[in-house]
Length: 280
Ligand code: SIN
Image 1 (cartoon, rainbow, N blue to C red):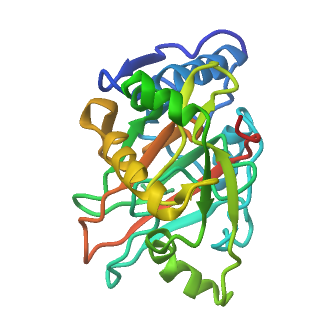
Image 2: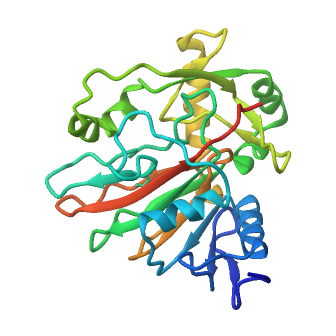
């Protein structure tokens, strides 16, 4: 397989974040050029979207492996035959949606994922969109003194932060694994992206509890400000899912928020996270 996929196009969806890639069939064998172009689009736009894909779990795993190594999610059991695929499920009778807060995936791990690939299996007739926010822009748009202050800080991130733990409670109950292990990791509050060299704000509402060396009382007002600032519409986009849509985001510089506005309907997506390195 040589050359770029015929008809491949990359179109930004906003001025702040996100691009839709068309003319690529993920079920087909992809050329090195096409894979490189997708990777570059991910680095440029932080999240890329594909429409109308018809792929099996094996094909989703094969796609992910072009970009890294699939990881295992610590709290919810993956598919029996493919433990690296986590079903992101909300049933019609449920009111809580998985991950339904602004967050970066599993930053309470020492090596949080570099990215996530999410594939739509069953969607509600309306709603259930996912928002994304650009954390380079969030950092760049802070004042110079605040950037300098944050540059020297370490953030403490916990899986046990109440709001995040609640969003996975239905699925953890399904798994019947009982008490959750408390996972916690310290990472720079501002990380340098290992591929682009750009600085990104690396605290998030879902998991960041305080700054190292500072009390909760001291950290909270600063974090509250950052949680509001980092999701401004100017740095964000909203992805309206459609059958067979797939999103691939860079977890090192983008955050996301699945909107919980479809009670009474089922929503099921297949998620794979890609192993990442230690933030610096
Ligand atoms: C997640 O946080 O991985 C879930 C995103 C979504 O359901 O849109």
